[in-house]
Length: 633
Image 1 (spheres, rainbow, N blue to C red):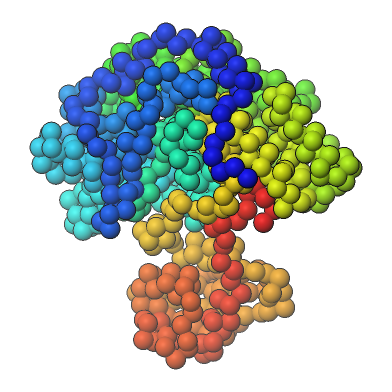
Image 2: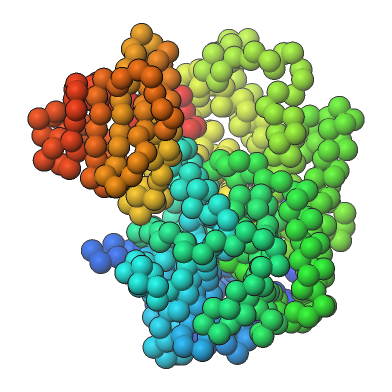
C-alpha cells in the first residue's frame, strides 16, 4: 500500500474551482481586521516544553501562501491563512491579544496596577510565551486577575503559565468564572475523556503532516497545543446577567450564556473601553452544535436568544468585539451586524431543522437538502469551517429526537462487522464490492465508494486492496472539504489505514484537572470504569472519610453497580478508610491499590477488612486510548 499522498482527482479539482466562483474572494476585509494592530510577530513561532519537546509550531503553516492548491478547498485555505496569523496585537489602547500561539487567543486588559488575563490558552508553555511577548512590549505588569470565559480547556489550561496557585491562594489574583465552571470543566475531560481525546486526534489532525496534502488548520484555529494543561479553581463565580465587578479598577458587566457553546459560559463588557468579549458564541465561522470528537449536543435556540440579548444589552454603546478565537471587529454598526448574523445563523439552523423534523424528515435527509439563505451563505463568518450545516442539522435532530429515526428497520440494525459481512456476501464477495467501489471512485462518487469499502474493511480487515482504496477515497473526500475537522477526520482515517493507529496524541486529563475532581465525581468515575460483568454477584460496602470533614461516603457494590451516598447507613461497612487529604483519594483509587499492610504508610488508615478495597479496585477496567475507528480492531 502506498504511504505517500495522492494528487487530487479531476473531480475534486473541479469542485474546488467551483468554490472560487461561488464565494466573494475579492472581499479582503477579514485580512485587514486580522492584521490590524499588530505590534510584534515572532520570527520563529515554535514553543517548547522544559524538556525540549515542541508543544507548538506555528512555523509549520508557512506553506499557506498564494492561491489554494487542488488538494485544499479554497475557502478553507483562505480561513487557514487567517487563523494561523500570530503575534501580539493591540485591539484598542489598553486591550491586547496574543493570537496564533494556540488554537485559542489570550487577551490582556490593563488595569490600574497590572493586567487582567482572559482565557489563558490550553497549555502552560504557550500561555507563558504569550505573556512574555506581551510584557516585552507593554512592561512587566503583574497579573491582577484571571477570567475564564467558559469551561473548555483551551480557555483555562494555560493558567499556570500566567500566574501561580500561591498568588491566587494569597488573594493577590482573583480568578473569575461563570457559575458551574469547575463541575463542567472537570467532567468533560474525565468521564468520557479517553474517547473524546482519541477522536480529538482525528478532529485536529494531530498525526498529519502540515501541508497541502495534510492538515491546513482546524477551521477555528490552526490546531491544539500539546503542552501541560493546568487548572486553578475559580475564586469568584458569576451567576446573574447584569452582575458587575470592578477588577484592578476595571469595570466589567456580565451576561450569562450557559448551554450555548459551553455548558458554563458568559459574555462580558468593559464600559470604559466600550469593548465586548463574546467568549465563543460569535466567531468567524459557523461553530459546532456537537463536535466531531463528541460532546453533549448544544442548544442553538438558546444560543440565538443570548445573542439577541447581547445586542439589546450592549449594542448601543460598544465599539469593538473580541473573542476567545479569531480576530476582533471594530465599529458599532459592523459589530452589531456581525452578532445579528451569527444569531440568525443558529436560529435558522434550529428553526428550519425543527420544521423539517415535523414534516417527517430524518437527520440525514434534512442535512442533504438543507440550504442557508444567500445572505448567510455568502457571509464568510457563517461558513462551515468548524461546524458544518450537515453535522449541525444532525445534531439538532439528535437533540430533539435521539438516535432512532423512527424506521423499524433501523431499530435493531447489525453492528459494523456483522453488517459488513452480510453486505459483502450479498453483493458477491469482497472483490466484487471493491470493483464496484473503484468504479464509483473513478466517477467521483467518493461518498458511495467510502460506504462500500467500509463494509469490506469491517468484514475482511486484511483485504489490502479494499484498505488501500478506502484510504485513497478518504483522502479525496478530505481534499474537497471546506470544514477543517472534516478534512482532518478524512485524512486521519486515510493515515491510519496506511500506517496503523496513532493512538491519542492529545491529553487533557492533567494532574490539575484530575486533582479538582470532587469526591462525588471520583466515585462516579469509578462507577463508569467498573467491569460489571465480573462482579454481578458481588456485594460489598466501603466507607471513606476525610480528616477534617464530618462527611462519610458509603460506596456500595451490588448488581454490578457502584453507588455512593453520604446519608446515614443502617448496615455496617466491611471496612472504613480514613484519608488524610483528598489528593490521596485520587492516587489510591485511580492507581494500583496498596497492600493492606502498607495503607497507613501512605496516609490511609483502615478499620475492618482492608482487603475489600483491593477487591473493589480489581473490578476496574482501564480505558483504551488507542481504540479502533476506521477498522474493526
